[in-house]
Each structure stands twice: as C-alpha cells, then as structure tokens.
Length: 456
Ligand SMILES: [Zn+2]
Image (cartoon, rainbow, N blue to C red; front, side):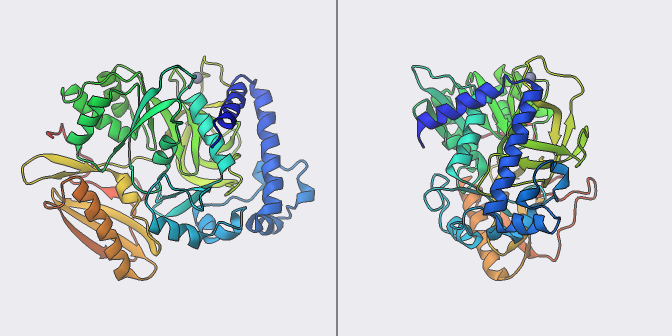
C-alpha cells in the first residue's frame, strides 16, 4: 500500500470534516449515484434485483435511496458471487482461503481483505474489501479516530484483539503503517498474565481493543497488576457500555474513543473529543434508522459508499441506533448518535483446577465459522463445562471435529484445556434469548454475572 496515496486520502477525508452539513449531503448524494452506476454495470445481482423494481441505469435521475429495495445478510450470502463486482472473487474461493490460512496478514489472492463474522444474528457472513476500499476505511480511522499527525518518533500502539483468523479488528489494527507506529498485537486468546507482562514492558501511547478486553485490563490496572499510561484508548467491535467506559476511564485517566466498526464497515463513526455520542460518518455511508428518513431511534439500514468490491446498499443490520437531540460543539457535519446497541456479548469465565480464572472472548466463538456451519451458540453449563450448539447444513461429523479442534486450541492457549470439558450438540434451531428475544452467541455461567476480579 502506497503511503503517499494513503496520506492523500487522509487529507481528503480530513477536509470533509470541515464541510457544512448541506455540502456534505451533496457529497453523499454524488457518491451514492456513482456507486449505483458502478453496481448496475458490474454486479449481476444488483442489475437483476433492481430491474425487477423497474430500476435501470437510465432511470437514476431523481431516484432516492428509499426507492431501492433492501438486502440483508442472507441475500448477500446466497447471491455472493453475483453480488461482488469482481469476477475473481468467489464464495467458494474465499471459504477455501479462510479454511487454509488463518494469518490475518495474508490477503485473498494477494489483494483482498476478507473477513468472516457470525455477527449478532448468528448467521455466518463473509465480507471483502479491495485495496481502494480498504484505503478509505484506513483513512477514516487514521484521520478521525487516531487523529494521526506525522511525528519524528514512532507511536507505540498496542491492541488486544482476536489475533488469529480473518477478523476485522486485527486486520485494521495491523494496517497501521509501520512508518508511523510501533505495533504490539496482544491476543485475547493468551493467558492474562502474559498479556499484562508484555503490555507493561511495551508502555503504549495508544491502546485499542474490544470494550470487554479493555475493561479487563482496567480491572487489572486498578488492582495494581498493570501500570501503563496510554494517552489514547480506542474501544471498538462491541457496544461500549457505561460501566466499561467508567472503569476504563478511572483506571487510565482518559476517556475511551468509541469507534463504531464492524465487518460491514470498518469505520461507521466515532466519538470526538467532546464525547457527546458517536458521530456517524455519513459522507461515506448512508444511515437509515428503521428505514424511515428522519427516524430518531431504531434498527439501522446501512449503505456503505466506499466498498466498490462488495457493495452493501440498503443493507439491513441488527444494530440499533438512537440519534442525539442536541448537536455536538465540535462542528463536525455528521449525524450524531447517542448510542449504538445490539452488539453486546459477554465473556465466558472459566475456573481452573488451581482456583484462578480466565476468560474466553466471544470473538473466539464467532470465528469458529466453517463452511456447512449455519449457526452456533456456546453455552457455559458450569464453571468448567462448555456446550456448543451447532446448526449445520451437512457434514455434521466433520464440522463437529473442526469446531472442537478450534475450541481446544483456544483453551490450550489459555492453559484452560486440562480443566474444561467440551460437549457438542447438533440442533435444528437455536432459540432466541427469552429475556431479549434476540439470538445470543454466548451464554455465560451463571448468566450475566461478571467476576469481581481475577487472580492471574
Ligand atoms: Zn463532536
């Protein structure tokens, strides 16, 4: 990746922060038009799908976003090969690639960033970004989240993520340029004591990770097991709730930046230094709340305006957004959300034979995805027992073996393998949580109870 091109894109992204709201919406409209022209000439799926609604390339004048039919994860997966705008990319090819290679630094066909997710609906999905798409995501994070300015020394940047497998967080973190950053990748799969030791030695200026992982580090700092002074903390990939935010702030004396990121877009939005909520970057996305323009609270329908490889246009998500009713004094022209919810998963805490505890992060479960596995749920049935419920579409025995192998690997890395027993169960359906009515990827034991602390 050319650093000059990236800096050029960052400069352009930075300039858009200073546009008026009105001018920014014009930019958004132009980008939507360009994307529609692109999909109508390069995506067989969109061309066919839109034609059934009477939408063709010669009828784009005056067309508004709400006139387009929506899509969802199931449609994206069922029509994967026809939807992507590059014939070199196939679902079977990506699935083979993910199966054969779990190094997040390796790109599919040497070019594409691919990632898999089970997301909050439990249905596995694949997402792919070309080099140009990726550069815009990087520029959004570099400019609006890291607020990177070239300096003489390198910035020490540590992040605690799922480091193995093609996952959004690690790929984005790894793409921080080596010219500007000295990076330390910490794995949520590693034992806590090893993570604390490496972090202590590294003394990061910047610290990034999932809110649950950062909250765990904050607990350790407050207990005196860690002494670091990061200048900036970036929380992403999950909902940052008040409890975690307060814990992180009290431990590190800095308020975490809330980066709203997922596989569907690596940078939906972020909080600014005023921390009034999450600014939704609607120069590079269209956000429809509950499908109604001007809606203030509801489910998000997303249009990603920078992914030209796998365009997501009116893509229905499970995330819920509540818009803020007062503006933020920072002057950014973007929509302001009070909060984004729908992405909360809990950690599974296990007890070792020696009485200490360690946890398995939900991302570990989410990456158990393998072809033929339609849905899964990890239920902790006791302090040392894990039940994996699997809904498969074939080759069940092979899938069980593969999933068990991966879980055993994760437990071994945490030194939990000798103490925890794993069971699997093939099910026809995974019922939603009776309390929330929503699917849950992980069910902790006892449900919803977090430990007071950990003794590594
Ligand atoms: Zn602001």
